[in-house]
Amino acid sequence: MTAIQVGRIIVKTNGREAGKKAVIVDLINQNYVLVTGPKSITTVRRRKCNIMHFEPTDKVVAIKRDASDEEVIAAVEKDGLKKFLEEIVIPKV
Image (tube, rainbow, N blue to C red):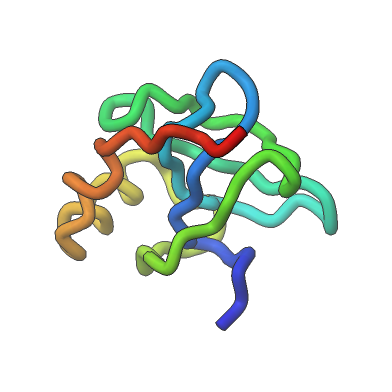
């Protein structure tokens, strides 16, 4: 199991979106990934995120690299993970 891969659902631990979940859409380099909520589900907009600022979960969505928000929403609904994405996690301090 690869912890950091396209389609992995993560929980942001730092910043204004701490505690919210997002989906990894692209791997930028060894330190950064591109994530999206999508914004209509979790209020997390598409942005670059340092890998040190999130915790991966055990859930993976089947999407292709650099998928649009509409494709991510369709994949999340198909896998039945929309309710899981909407839940907010209290980050550990």
